[in-house]
Length: 448
Image (cartoon, rainbow, N blue to C red; front, side, top):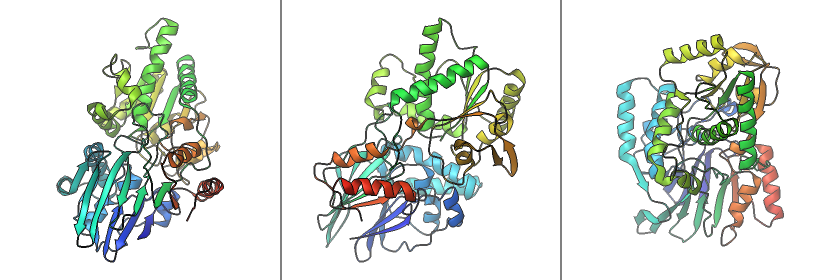
C-alpha cells in the first residue's frame, strides 16, 4: 500500500490523493484546484502526474478545491468510473460548468461535451453499504460511503483493499451542527486514516452562539439602515445562512410585533448559489434531523418573504445602484466566499468605506486572498488592482464553518470502534496541522 499526495498535503487547497494497492493499480481521491497563495506556487492546473493504472476516482464532495482539476484530468485522458454520493452526482454538473467558464473554456459546445462525458463516468452510490469497485485475480477492492457533514452529499470513504487493510479518507469533516446536514459518521476502524486538519488548532463558536452573533448583526442592520455584506460560498454556507436567517426574522417579527417584509432586503446575488439552493430544496431526504423536523411546519425553510435573488449582470448593477441611492437596510449574500472575484467584490468596492456597513465572514479565508486581508483587520485592501480603505465593521463567525474544529476532529477519531493504526494529516496549513498532530500524539495516536 502506498499513498501519494498531488495536493493538500502541505496546504489546504488542491486536494488530490492517490492510493496504490499493488504495482500498476491505484485509485484517486479528489482532484481539486489550488487557491490563494497556493495557486501562486501551482499556477498551472494541468495534470502533472501519470494517470496510468488509476482504476477509478472517489469524489468526497463538490467544492472546487476538491473537484476543480477534474476537467484537466479528463483532458489528460482519464475515462474511468467516478464514485460519489447521490447528491454529489446532482450538484457536480453545476460546479463543473462554473469552473469551466472561469478557467477552462466559455464555449457552450465544449462545456456540454464535458458535462456529457463526466455524466457517463459518474457512479452515484448509497451510504452505509459496501460496494465492490475493482476485482481481479489479486482480489477485490470495496468502498463504503459515510456522511461527512460538510456540505450536502459530502462523503467519508472507507476503502478495503485485497489485503484486508482499510484506508479511510475523511474528506472535509463537518461540525455536526449544521441542521441541513447529516452528522459525520465515524468508521469502525482504519489501518490508515487520512484526516483533514483545516481547523486543527481552532475552537468554533457553538451553533447557539453563532446564531446570536448573526442576529446581533442583523438587528444592527435594521437599526442603522446600513448594508451587511456576507461573502459566502455558493454551496453549503449560503443555504445554512438562509435557513437560520429565516428563524431569526421570525423571532424579530414576534418580538417587535411587525413584519420585516418592507423593513429590510435580503439579497442573494449569485445565480450559482440560487441554483444550488433549488437543488438543496429538491433533496430534502438528505437533510439533517433538525431540518427534517422544521419541514413538518415550514415547507420552504430556505425561502422567506423578504428574500430576493439576483439573476443577470444588469440586475446586479441595478441592485448596487438601488442600495447606494436609497440607503435602506439590506443583507447581501454574494460569492465568492474569499472575495477573490465574483459579485461580492462590486459590493465591497461600493460599501467597504462606509462606517454603517458590516462585513460578515462565515468561512475559511485562504492566505493571500482579499477576504483574508479584510477579515484579519487590515486598514485597506486591494480589489481588482485598486486600493480601498476599510471603514466597515468586520465580523468573523467561525461557528458557520463547514469544517470541524479540533474538538470535532478528535471526536470523529475517538468515535471509531478501534483506534486507527496510523493517521496521516492533510488539508491544513503548517501551524494548525502541527498543533493538531501534537494533540493527537498526546492522546496516544500514531501520526505519520
